[in-house]
Image 1: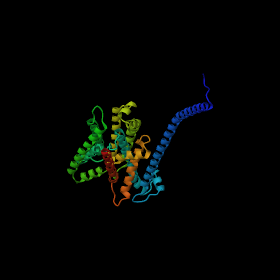
Image 2: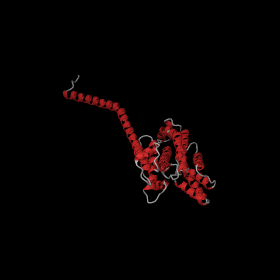
Image 3: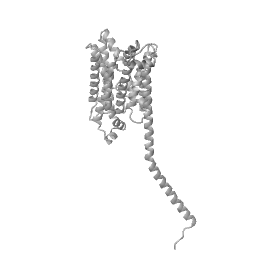
Length: 372
């Protein structure tokens, strides 16, 4: 005997079918909208990143203009433009072309080298302490330069060349000592810190053996300064940025993959050993060239990457923003040391005062995390 569904049963069945159809339609709509939502978020992040980079460029341009106009004497913008255009203006031409322009240009180029090299190391090793001035590369360049000044009585370009060779040599030594079927991040950092301590001891010994004038020269170089820079020194820095910076930017995607861990990077097709070696050579070259011209300006390579990552909210590669932050950091640090303090201080002193508290805070925070 068959039973005929009642009116209420038919209504319930119709409602259930309607709910299933609505749910299926919603899932279909969500599936269709998810790719467009992801694309929209990606475009929004890219716009935000481009906006931050544009703001950094504007701030850097404003800092260069301020450096050119302000000093012992004020030079108005019209005169600055005239001198830069090739017009000879008594007094202003010498001040701009021989003093202020070389200082500003080398501050920007050296800061970009420090920032780009430091951010590459920190991204590769996934550790904010993995900066060239923390793991011994800057110490290697400094030790080589002090040896050249004190023991070989060299000056100028030969000292810069020895510093570059010293920085590259120490970096390769750190890499070789850290190799155990690959380079582990922690092992490389600890090896670099140990070598840095040894090199600092060697520098201290060399300074005790130095006569009066070489001692003054070595101490000035060790501090990190833009005093006595020349416009022709900007060409090696510019070439270093082009020859070493562009290949480093080529590794930007690999660096982002390496942030996820070695296994994930291998899964994404990154050849870890070859990529690490290329990044080390390029980043060390940038830092060594900058150190050879200005000396080891403290904490610029260390701070540029974290500050840039905070500004762009970790949206994409940090390399270009870090280069701009490093340039701005050196330029403003030199301006503060020259014009906003009771006495004149080298830029390395200013950046050291700014960077040291951050390093202490970072170490204390890591210790607190390790204890919890």
